[in-house]
Image (tube, rainbow, N blue to C red; front, side, top):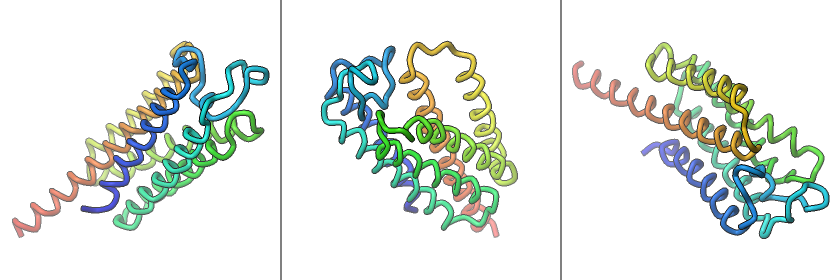
Length: 200
């Protein structure tokens, strides 16, 4: 099995375990009233929420997940000859680095808002480019990814979110779907190649 088929799902699992465990350790956290980053830093005086218990769980979890995303992207690049797709995955490496930076520059530090926002922006650009690259080889997956990215931004800008955590969770779900669609496209492409080999 190619490493991307392990690393992709592993990144998704790592992200949700990090979020879930951090929420469990902080009973005051409310999806409808907080930001996910409240789990990694801040204080009642400065950020209007209690100082999180075990903030390192959230911060190190993000760093680990960011590294896995970068490794996933590298594994895809190493097994692909698609230039446009590899550009998209290069962007995804950068998004993984930005996710790790969210853990390093946690809430309460100056660069936090910048790295948080750009993680989602760069990740969406990444999979928009990947979608475009798939139009030639896996058309239905390429169209699906492009529609997903455009629709996600329309929904994000249109919905009156009650909290930052809500739109962050929405963004994480969209990225997860994009990664899974990408993996399905790679698996589908491999099956087609195998079938062609058998016919020839």
